Picture 1 (cartoon, rainbow, N blue to C red):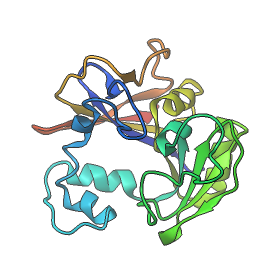
Picture 2 (cartoon, one colour):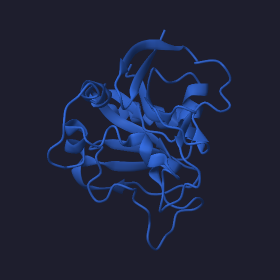
Picture 3 (cartoon, rainbow, N blue to C red):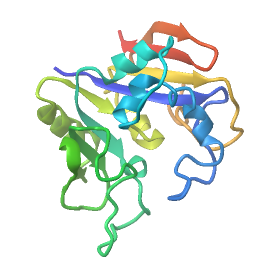
Picture 4 (cartoon, rainbow, N blue to C red):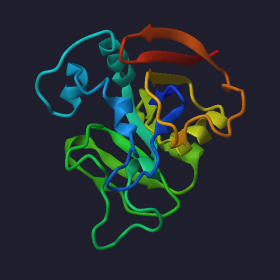
Length: 214
């Protein structure tokens, strides 16, 4: 069976997004600092259609995290738009423009039904109202034997972690403090739900902690 793989960047004080997240500032105040380590990488820039870039110790981590992925699951907050029912006049189609970087089926957890959205490059957003297990089952079928990426946000990840459904988790620990915002591990107690540390890659900008199912 394909694995469910999750990766996220986190501050030293445990936040994966800053306070006051909004449509205009989806990562919250200071949240962009959590991702500055990846922006210069050639491998990341290529996924965004950007030229140039560099290679360093984080390159192979990013390459591993995107290899053999055939579908993605994400929460409503990660997909974005205002909370509540979808707007009919100008329906939200995500943060990523007309050609998102996924290039495969994406399943969005939501309480509000909506028709699928087809965009350029092979990305198709399907909106799932039946819960995390149904979304994962649909994603695995769509992945065709490849792995499924869990893109976040924190609330969706918490549900999958609590259910013991995550097979691999990569925490990109960034040496910065946010002070407040959204934490990943709130409400999960002291149990990693079957995951154990399998690999560490330390760099001056970020430390990559990979956990795998025992």
